[in-house]
Length: 61
Image (cartoon, rainbow, N blue to C red):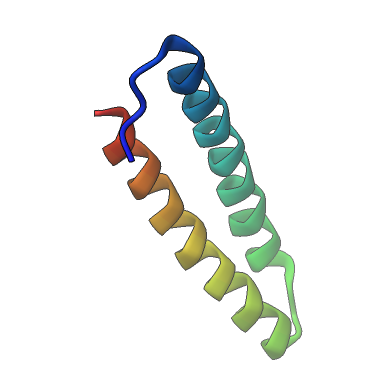
């Protein structure tokens, strides 16, 4: 999938910005979580979000 139109490119930038906010929030929440199971879930989500960010950056380059 390759974004070719201006509208699609703007949508990808918006999605990338959202994913970056999610990553920052999850990173902060992981530091506050005391439950091991919750920490594990947050870690998994951080890894998936980082992959999504890399994928979006690839599409935008």
